[in-house]
Image 1 (cartoon, rainbow, N blue to C red):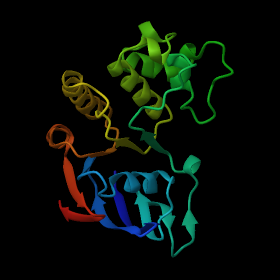
Image 2: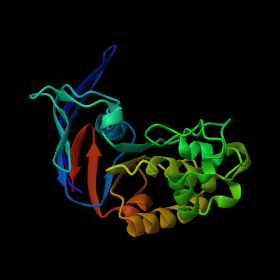
Image 3: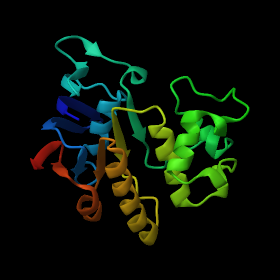
Length: 222
């Protein structure tokens, strides 16, 4: 994977303003953007995913421009082939585990009466050992299982990169440690490129192949 990102974004709220001015290039399969709250980490993820439009600059993934202000390119979210794992997982409470995963398909497969039998859904149910709870709803399963469901939903469409927003912050300490190991093993096994943002040094130690330190909207170190 190659990520080439050079963006500028100014935000204003009353008498407060924030200036994101970020430039980074990496060919790593496992990138961690590390810094305190308010450093601009989530803004960076949203820019890559197409949820926030930079004022200027460019974002290129594997040589393909997702955004380029000078060329007038700003691909919509659906065309970026980028998966975004939200901090709270954003699972649909009224859908089963299998239906939640199926929702990640390009056209979805909610009309299917048996989404657990869809080949792509079945693949990820097996990969994350979720077959036994395929028909359960999010409120009926553990925090670790909910995270695996969210990961499966993100990966079912085979994205070019997986973006993770503080993925362990909602978990207790023991589960957090175990899920770090599971995510590291999963990434190594599947070779899915990922960019993770965090303020926790333990995440950096467990998952950081290439680490960029961000503070006040600017890179401090690599």
